[in-house]
Image (tube, rainbow, N blue to C red; front, side, top):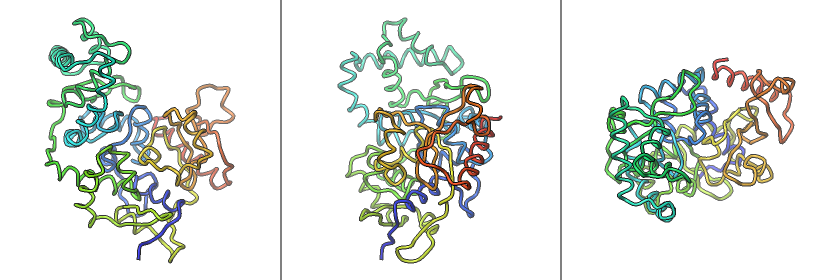
Length: 381
């Protein structure tokens, strides 16, 4: 008989699976372990992506996470949905082997608007490689744009970023080391993938489909096929091929009549009997950055985000996710880094300024202070 759970329990299982809510049996992961476990985590807001990694690696500071980029262990590129993600360096190539072709095809109309042709991409590639050879193997986006412009490749109106997008999808470039001092860099240097990635893994297509499915459901589950399809943007045929290969390594659970897949270790966290199945974390309060995988990893976010709070989390449904206060697995408010002394009275740990949708209990209020202190520690304060 398939186990059934409620949406609140489903949400807290995801917190555990994503390493946000540590379990008593889970070892403490380092930054690279976190990225390897999640496989890919959304990264267009770079400081937020650094904290997404750090909060899952207790005790890690921003400088620790930056160190993993500087050593070439993790990188940032566009492996899925046309959106920047952080991935393990060794895994980026085989993920792109599954996703790049569909992304390039999906950009064809936009590239016609921008007057980007195949020869233009090849010219940009030549210029980028030449500049990197002259610059010690790393270069800024601005440096690449200047080289493109000098040779007649326009970069305004997003044309330049689309040229870089193509060079990254085709495996020429990747964003690697941090541009700036420890704890202060908000951008990365572009480097050559071939020389920066030390031990790239190469997988046959069906093996790659199976591995991506297994790693997604283990790290993000409980999740549905629709969630995985939205996250990866693979075809339904490819998704079913991958899941069929690894189904025997996963457990299923039901919620509101839908089938969800998850790691056996996640399923073991459930306690209680029959329809009273539950999981720890009901009193937890967490601070998550905007664009965190806890919300962005699924097409159906209702277990964690109430419909009436969605406009407050993503104002105007514009795709810009605010940082969230998550209480017991449910989004209970938003927060931002305090910017001025005038906000001092409302700050937590001197750095966090929360805005609540619902009132927290006294116990949860103390837990919020603890979460704010962890964020301050991550920043090195």
